[in-house]
Length: 121
Image (tube, rainbow, N blue to C red; front, side):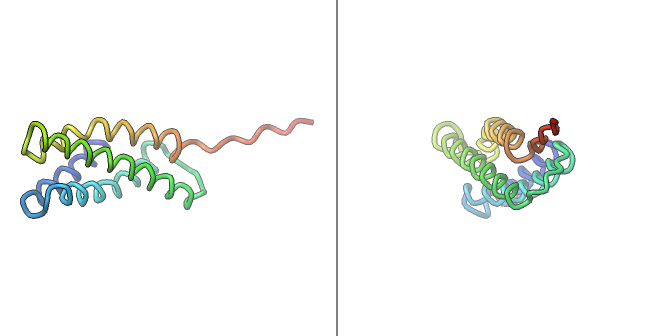
């Protein structure tokens, strides 16, 4: 699944590179890939059956925001310090942004619902 989302992300960055400012190209690619990411995570990775969809979407949006800011920060640092290649800068942003997103998704967004305590007499 990660490879599919990464291919979408990098593919859109590649298509937009040179046509748009770097951070805008990265942002558009990121949000395109995020849509695929949500659906694949919910249905396949975590097999999430939560029914509180609005709360889940709000939590997912917060995770996406945190991961997106991580991505932009690292891309900016890379472009301003050691490379002018947007794809290389994006490559350096993937591991930390992925780790942050996975942990937050697992712990909050796609967590298993709390099981009610068994009735005791």
